[in-house]
Image 1 (cartoon, rainbow, N blue to C red):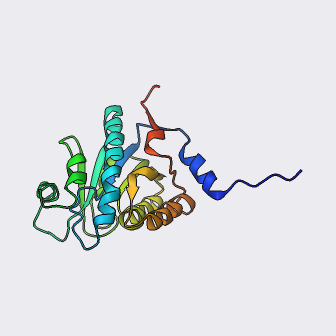
Image 2: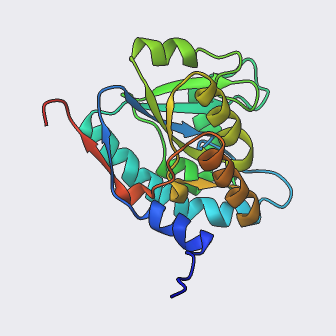
Length: 208
């Protein structure tokens, strides 16, 4: 009797629907370029994807913070070498910013950490290595914008540092769905990352 091989798309979907338990100790949630004005030509399609993504990511962040997982904002400095993160937040949440709804929903709190980056990767010429070492982080949950650029570059460098990767597929967006799908496929197949959706991630505190 001949059996039909499972289709790749169905395999990926079932993997993303599986419940994953992440230990609180040694984990960190990375929010990459979510404080973003999204002010560039043709950004409308990305804004349309990022706004619903921000709702899902805000819910994941609340659960992570409640469990005790540190949340680290890794943000582009937009070439503004004399500005700080507070000024970046003010600019991106201003009324004229196309990305204001995303930035307002994901606005950091005083308990969050932040790292400003000059290039695509959150590790390149930043203090992220030092911060993760101080927090004793061994696994990272990667989220944000854009999946095929800054998230992927950061994921690659995290993998090279032997960090375990989680990349909730519903909390990462790119300019197009096709580019996002390619980035997620690279994270899963090359960097051994787990793509379970944010709603399938649970956190386990020490002693539980």
